[in-house]
Image (cartoon, rainbow, N blue to C red):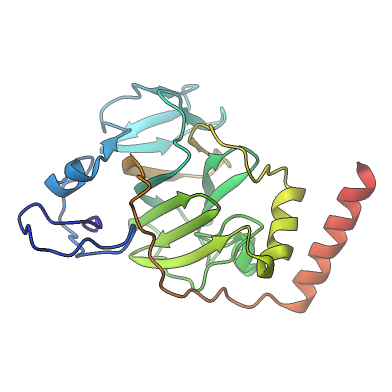
Length: 257
């Protein structure tokens, strides 16, 4: 797992980096543990790698080699020990089986970090529904996924109206829903049921009927003083035929109301 942003406790003169920006990548880092730096930044483990304390599990999720693993029908698994802070950073590792689909919900109204096998699953053909997208809203800037069966690192950073998704050390989404240039994406999000100002959800891992694994889930509440990474992110271009289907979907949804 990549080392977190912030001041390195071992280096008092180190410059504090923006939230989400990497200082280094440690492929051999112990799973389901917090580094000294993560502890100093206020991260907490929300999955201990041993059992589902703090989680609502219907019985279809098991602990497999220190990971949350979907094994049977029964629905998603929800972290109910506490609500998601209004402003937060979640770090996690994930991997999928061939053709698998899942996601992490983190705000009320279908705010979802998409988990996907981009190469095989049909959702991989549409950037708005590909891995690390804000599902059916904001496409990532690129496909930064590792091959199926290998672990990926993910991050969700939310502060105010800004939402960032990171994948394998790359910021692939930087979305401010109050920015007028994202009016179309906001419309798509609203059609799915999003209340832009709603807060206080529980993290939920989606059961889409496929084998998926999650581990090293680490959460911290962001302070007012925490600065977001400002690196420019350019969303991948959406094909015209996809945009036409989106317009039809929006029109039909409005007719039903």
